[in-house]
Length: 421
Ligand code: GLV
Ligand code: MN
Ligand code: MN
Image 1: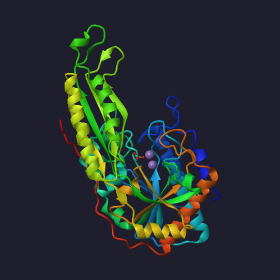
Image 2: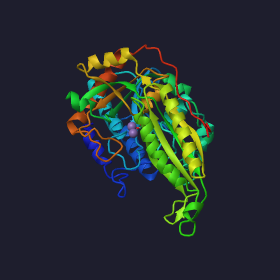
Image 3: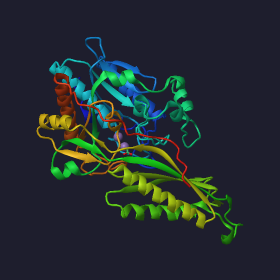
Image 4: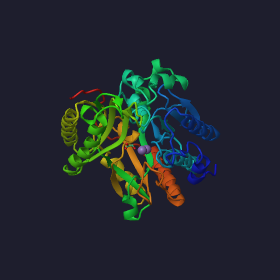
């Protein structure tokens, strides 16, 4: 094969374009994501890889010359996107994996290896990020995952079944986890660390702890023209004040990041006072106890602001992932093997972070000249993309020759409802 990463990404450049938002909208189990999955399956099959989709919807493309899938060096990423996202978050890792496998084949590198494509990494359709890897590791129960709803009210169970998966079979996959001797995810960098260092490829040190909460503010739906201002219980007013309070509370906490990027008023009409508003909150901090206390303060503020408007508020934890420090010995080995590649942290979540509690795991980053991500301006220059794929091949070759024996950290993930106010 003579594919390049840039050439592979060119092939999918028109899939899932979002004319309204700009960039790409490729939600899990949408037509766009299905087309991308078919595209990947075709490329994997053309390379002679054995392609299977497991009970959680994860695609595995295997190179297993001995017939055994044990002791596999696995790489992979995702094909779903945030709404209006960039071209590289996810697909860069998949395209780089295909090119890296070509290079390993050309070099005659043996051993068992696989490419994994995880579903709903962004959580942009069903709210919980990294759903595929969480299901596999048991970091979310199948009952809870299957009951998650998209904005059309469809459950994950319904949508997965329409895509040919059997919801009854979804859940932990200890065999898949046990088969992996290592997992390495390549990803476009989502900041300017490598730009500032003048380097095309880096190795991840850590993933910032992060979580998502839904603050549901209930008021009274009514007519915009006939309801006097004094008579209103308008949850949108409380939501507006809450968004500013989130910003202020996070600014007062060094190292914290808090974002409201999604607001869902019901019913959402220009001439309708909303009956309910869901305010989706994303909070991140290196210290998980600081995240918890910041979210608690936001919950108290939400309750007060809701009361001011004659409304009530309920805060529900949708997902929580503790800070992940990738294994220092593994990342030092990779960095040394890749010409002293710089090591840098990330504020973004990844399937690699979920797997790190179970499998020796590492991440490679490829330079992003804009430093922008989750937006159409996200970028990776062609030469850097090829350098990333070559680094991934080098890393997988290193792991094939000398697999890591690092101990795995306990999983810190929790999910679940948590009404506070
Ligand atoms: C995923 O990219 C996230 O960090 O939310
Ligand atoms: Mn990603
Ligand atoms: Mn992302």
